[in-house]
Image (cartoon, rainbow, N blue to C red):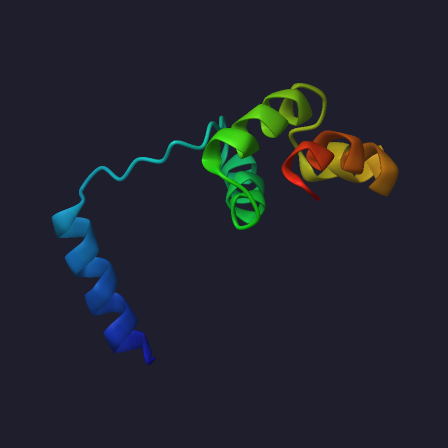
Length: 81
């Protein structure tokens, strides 16, 4: 898909849905990115349950990195990861 076609799709979506919303809870663009990645593997409800606890202790790339793999796994195991 070329840039012109992508722009046209985005333009039409912007008109059709001027204020898009999501059920995923987030307070920053980074949190939304993580929630969207996790939502590919679970329901939004399940992701919200996991990220409520995760984002309370780690809501930046640096903080998630500091958790390490085992630390992060303890938060996302509830959604099967």
